[in-house]
Image (cartoon, rainbow, N blue to C red; front, side):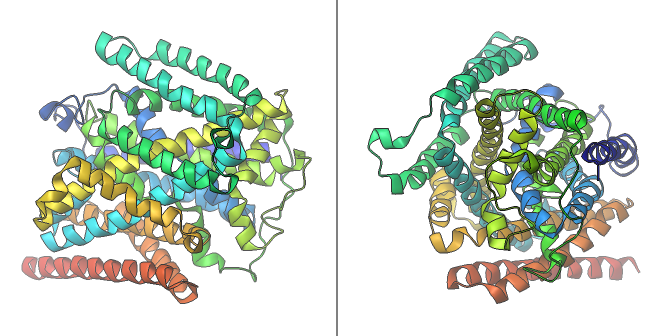
Length: 549
C-alpha cells in the first residue's frame, strides 16, 4: 500500500467532514448565532474569562487536546495491523470525536461557561453531578499520571530536548506579555518565537541536559522529572491563561503545523510503501474488539477534550460561531496527528537503522512500552529522507511530543482544580474551594499513580477506556439537554451508544485480568460509577417520556 495515497485520502475525508458535517451540526442541531453573547464577554475577568481571537484560541485548544495520547495510542494499535487503526482514527474522529468536542463546547457556551458536570445537575439532578465530578477527578488523575510519565521518560532518554522545551516556556511568557499588555497582533511574534525555538532545537541537539550532573542518582532521574513536572504544572495552572497557556499553545499550534507538514511532506515526496500487515495478531494479545478502540483513545474520541472544551476553552470564545472551527476543527487536527503517528509507525520505521521491536511483530506489552519511541524514530526516519540531519530530526520530534504533552499536563491540572472546587461546592466541603488546596489535591494523587511501578505498565488501557467512557457520558448529558429542547439527537445518541458498549466491555475485561488489587479496585470503582450514571440517565428519560405520554 502506498502511504502517500492513503494519507491524501484520509486528509480529504477530514476536510469533507469539516465542510459538510460540522456545518450540519452548527446550523441544524446547535443553531449557532453571533447575535448571542459568549460567557467570555458576560463574565470577563481577564484571568479565566478572556475574549480571545479565534485563531489564538484554536491554537490553545488544539494543543491542549493534542497531547501524547494520539501518538501513543495509534503506535500501539498497529499491533493489530494498520487498516483497523486507520479506519477508527478517520471515522471515529469525523463522526464521534469531533462531534463530541464541538457539542461539549457549544453546550458550555450556551450555559454561561459551566462545566459538563455542572450542566448535568440542571439537566438531570445533583446526584449525577457529584458522580460525574468524582469520575472526572479519577480520570484526570490518570491523565496527569500518564502524561507526566511520558514526558519524564522522554526527558530521561532524549535529554537533547530539555533545553528547547524549557526555553519555549520563557519565550511564551515574553510573547504573552507583548500580546496582552501591548495589545499587539500575535502572528508575527509567534512566528519569531517559533524560529527561536528551532534555533534552540539545533543548540539542544548538541547540548543535552542530564539531571545526573546536578547530583541526581541515575536510578531516580525519571522520578525527579515527574516531581519537577508536577511542581511546574501547579504554578502554570494558577497563573492567568494569557501569561503562559495561550501564548505557548499558539506557538505550539504553529510547531504542530510545521511538524505535521514536514511529516506529510516527506510521505508525499518519498512515498514509502507500508510494509506492515493490514490486519494481524487477531488471535494474540488482548481482543481487537474492544481494545483497538480504547487503545487508540484520544486519536479518535476523548472525554478529556470535553473537559477542555467546557473547562477552559468556553470561557475564552469570542463569538458563538467560532466554536465550529475551534471545537470541530481542532479535533480534526488531532486526528491528523493520529494519522501521522500511524503512518510513521508502519512506513517510517523502514528507514531506521537501529534494531527496534516492530509493534506488529512483538508482544503487546512491548508494543505499549515502545510506542513513543516508534513514533519518534519513525518520524525522524521520514524527515531524514528529505535532508534533515538525524540528531536535529530526532530532537525536533521529541520537542514536538513533549510540548503537547506538557500543555495537556498543565491544562489538566487547571481543569482538575476547577473540578475539585466544583466538587467542594456540590458536596458542601467548602475547604476544597481554596485554590492552593485544590491544586495540591490535583497533583498529589497523580504523583503516587505515576510513580507506582505495578500500575505504570497497566495504566494505558484503563486510561483509554475511562477516557472514552467520559466522552459517552458527556454525550448522554448533551443528548438529554438537546432532547429537552426538541432537537434531533441522533448524531449524538449513536456515538454515545457505540462508545458505551465498547468501554464498558473493555473495563470489565480489564477488571477480570488485573494483576494488582489497586488496579482492580480502580476498574471496579469506575465501572460502578458508570452504571450508576447510566441508570440515572435512563430513569430521567423514562420519567420524561411517561409525563409526555
